Length: 303
Image 1 (cartoon, one colour):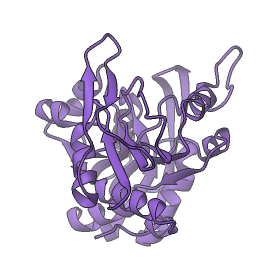
Image 2 (cartoon, one colour):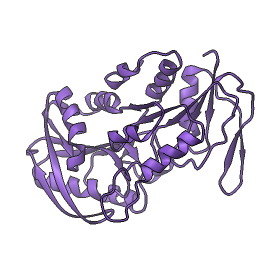
Image 3 (cartoon, helix red, strand yellow):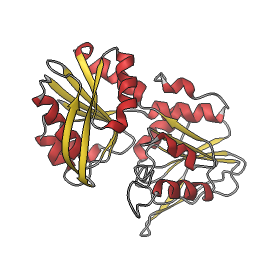
């Protein structure tokens, strides 16, 4: 594409390359191995539209000051779960991240499946929050033969809107699991609201960290009569005991998008499968650069 430069940070170069393959080529980046692994742009971007692709683990970027426009793409926005003050002295770190990106010089943010949609309001610059839903629907229809006899399940009440949208487009039932936490990353009690007896259960969530919630949810669904259980997640963080828990759980498959690199985790867990969403991110860049609407991407996977 003319008058556009695409650069990659160091945390997810594979995704950046797939995006660049659809739009042109990656720009030159010099990575200096300091303790914070600084990335420095290695070619002129004067009066160009600068797109920087960053993974969830990126610590910082040194952006060229003479670019005409700086569009930052974060497939997974860091600290997105800290979007509200849910207890005394809890930080609202998502607002801090929004301020940092704006002050650093970003003119536009492209991200995917924010943990809470109100995070868009934390920014003083335009934010495009893309959805993995079209790619998820495509995967379900192509890989689950009994998808017409399934129930789409949210592992918590907060994901009910996401699950009902997918269930409506598949024309199937939905259910949700009410959970109570004793503390962070530790679930105390779960209650299933809905029917999964003699059906395929598809757990859908925006992210999974230690996977305690989805593994407990899978056990709950199986005990409630589900024939098979799948988990589909936009962001597979998989920290701590996550891989061990997935291996020991009753999942047919745990499906994630490639917003976060999964190659190493797939070597230790055969249940993990990956949906490529690079075409959605690439098309969002193209449409943003050309001043076109991105709303088409909310319901379609570009070819």
